[in-house]
Length: 101
Image 1 (cartoon, rainbow, N blue to C red):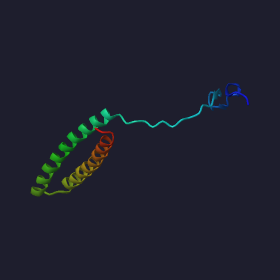
Image 2 (cartoon, rainbow, N blue to C red):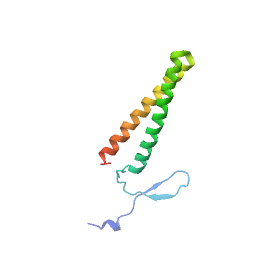
Image 3 (tube, rainbow, N blue to C red):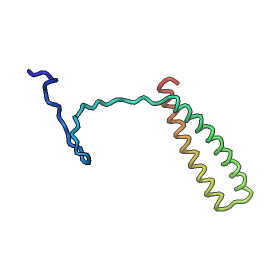
Image 4 (cartoon, helix red, strand yellow):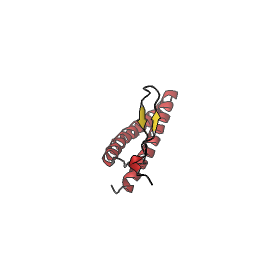
């Protein structure tokens, strides 16, 4: 049985440059999340979420006094952003909890 070092290395032609490159075995590597970056993002999102909730509360008060279509559209937009942000916060919290943070 021949040694693996004496076997020819398979090559593949790449388009463009036309150079032959050896084919190397690819191993799947599970990348761990950057927990500090996730924690920083979580802090930023919570701060932004509080700002959006304040804006939404003020807008709701204004809409009770002076209802209009523009305010209603803005309130819906803020509510959708708050909902998306809440989902992302829950996602990050679950990831951090999974890794013991």
